Amino acid sequence: MPTLDPTVTDRLIDRVRVHATRYIRRLPARQVRASATVEELRDALGGPLPDQSEDPVAVIDRLADHAERTMTASTSARFFGFVVGGAIPVAMAADMLTPVWDQNASLYVAGPAAAVTEEVARTWLVDLLGLPPTASVGFVTGGQMANTTALAVARHQVLASIGWDVERDGLAGAPAVTVVTGAERHSTIDRGMRLLGLGSQAVLVDVDDDGAMRSDRLAAALARNDGPTIVCTQLGNVNTGALDPVGELADIAHAHGAWVHVDGAFGLWAACIPRLHERTAGLERADSWAVDAHKWLNVPYDSGMVFTAHPDSHRAAMGTDRAQSAYLEFGEQTRDPLEWTPEFSRRARGFAVWAALRCLGRAGVVELIERGCAMASRFAEQLAAEPGITIRNHVVLNQVLVGFDDVAAADVISAVQRDGTCWMSGTSWRGEALMRISVSNWQTDVDDVDRSVRAIVACYRAARGS
Ligand SMILES: Cc1ncc(COP(=O)(O)O)c(C=O)c1O
Image (cartoon, rainbow, N blue to C red; front, side, top):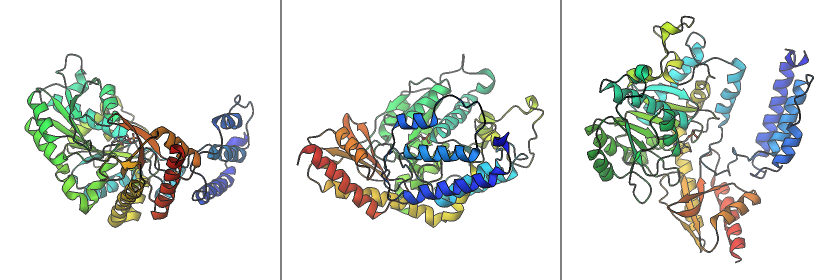
């Protein structure tokens, strides 16, 4: 059985090192777009399942050689699509060791190191982000599951507060739970609601010119509302980067007995920037927070965290029935990670987050986030200098919306993607098709922005025929 021969491990690790260093070294010079087509990849990797075992080194070589060419270089310093972070080397290294150790981050006893790194990272993160020191945490796959977990905990608490046990009795016959959220919330809020049986009919609150929820409109919406309520606010509008006035919104919502969640998938990192403290003031008064490490902290996928100010509710919503699982060994004095996430067995996500925070320190995280903001502002200033190009949002964080006169944004975007210098995606905002730039990579510097601006301007001029 050659594929299970343990002696190949050394050779495989050597090959991984070769492929990894080659990929990383080529990044600055390679085009950001993929160089091979999907058909080429299918030809190289597809076909029927082999009848016989294949040499494992050959398998890895085949995968790396062919898959890499069909990759958009999303860890490139000139990748600005969606909200995609890269991978700082120390987090990547810790993440590479994670499957080597292959710890099951479910029970403390099964993986004490996995549990403890999560605990330490929790303590560092609540300090860095200004969350309540006693906040509970769950290490989840990303923003989607952080939002969904927070909504499940919120659902538990708002129903428990009126005497309904949703974990025992479900939602059939339960008092209706209303979710109130900004008109420009992220779609993961709606998906979380659907997954939790809350439906997708949220009460939508008007937003301001940049897409932040208006507090007067929230107050009006809550005045018309009755019963168990969850208010979902947002730090970091996915188009504009706008920050909801979370502290103010939390006070209004709490006066109505609502639970306040903050979707801060990328924007919660703004909380560690002294310059932005006024804009994030009072965020600690919310009840739950979602943040991604795999976006702006530049930890590899999959890595998100959900925090709540109500550990008992968090555990009530996520915990397992211990009596039903007699084979499990729960700790009395220790924290079992599975009680804080919807998952049971999973990889030890805490290692990479711990390594990133330990290596960057407070100053490093602040610098990382500040740099993203500064590079986004540089994009905005330089692009706005080109006649016919306008910036459509106030650049408060790392997001820039770009409009083009006389040509369709989609034409400029696809020309830029084909050119390969950089990669950005598009969006539709307030009925207008726009280019969308997100500076979320730890390496993006002045030269990357300037080269990218030149490429965008050249594509725009060509499309416009000027
Ligand atoms: C504001 C916001 N919330 C949630 C998400 C979803 O996060 P993830 O892709 O990590 O699930 C995103 C993704 O861009 C986001 O921007």
